[in-house]
Length: 387
Image (cartoon, rainbow, N blue to C red):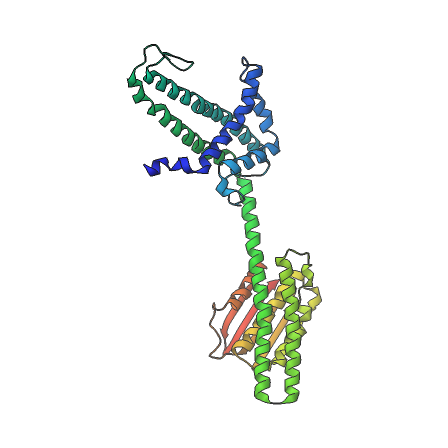
């Protein structure tokens, strides 16, 4: 019984009823003016529904009164955007016509069924004959009291049922079109890609800076040489300053501030990475062939991050070991290769968020990346197309 009566205690039940009553207000005004041509309002709804902004207004009303729990949800089943196609406009026209019909039914349910209930009570009381627009009873009798629950049950069912029906039809006719769903999916994909890019930026820049700082601090403490300690502190300071710049740039993106993408470091600044690795104790043998200035911006920026993460992995897992860095700008390809002696601490292929980030960066640019053991060395080999 409690489950049966539960809709009576939901605010949605009454907001849906209010949504059904709204069109009848305008219909009632017209019937007061000209009852003979009752069909005119239904005819006016056709050109009205073809106005793009009407769909947005109906969607806002439907979300507010029919599905208040979905209000503001990007995945809401009812759209709140203007009509973009003729199909959306015709769907809006159909919704306006259906809403008008449901409004008339709601008026019948909410007005005439209570009148029937009152007439049955009067007929059961036996005081006076009943003569109303709904029913006529010349001989009142107590047995009419047995019929009193019927219109009340019909009233309850009509209110709840019409609200549910209006909501289901609104989801169908005012729901997002295929083009709108595709646009929303594209926007969500862009947001996910942006979040992944920011996560990779933070991992590569901050991870590299912390790795250099830890290695330098440990080496300075172990060396016990004031001159070496000064160099280590200088390297930590420079790396930390660069990491703070990267962090500020990423936070500016999160705050939606306008910062040019070109402010991100490129391969033309690779010397800073190589010097930082050398300052941390790694013996870096670098070879650059081709003009790095000719590499397109997106490729150069992602290449810088790939090189940064590769050197970070060397310092983190292998320490002060010889490192071979090869950067080659070819006809249509940028090649990056970082090799160092394989140690037991080097993770195997496919493990570690840094290695995964390298492969993701290469894949986004249409390139390929190989990370793993090769001829006794640990190798990171990446090829990125320049076009």
